[in-house]
Image (tube, rainbow, N blue to C red; front, side, top):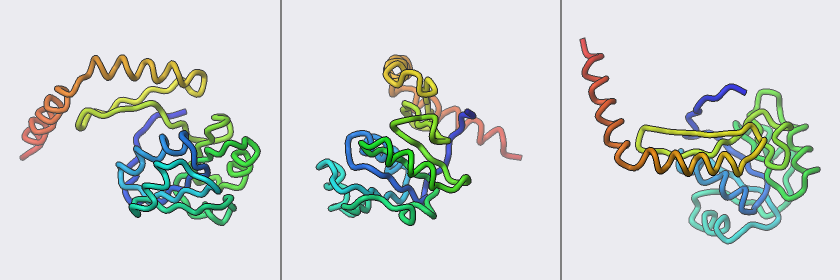
Length: 165
């Protein structure tokens, strides 16, 4: 796997599943300005609330391949591994797919991550131990506290000054 960051502003994201995992996956995408559609017969209150606020779209029904045929990113986070596998199977080879129940089926891992202004740090164990990735993330959050946002902003300003002719 090759680590990189993707600008998600305006990108279509379809999430199959309406539980806690789907919710955790959608929050950073929502923050980055992605257009998110959740498709699940049921959804937790937090997802329903976002839909009521019109911050996401929620379709309370089972997912179908036509729902994600034009999605940039598909997240299969249902509580049924067979449905998640089916989603990965029907996705186009050129789509980004994350399968919560089996990381080997998708082509994208979503790391544990956090930001301090422009500083972004992400950690993954490649699906080996997500709890360990979260533990490492917590340690890094303590090491790189909020003061790093100002520091990185200052570094950015200095770099911009150096780039001027």
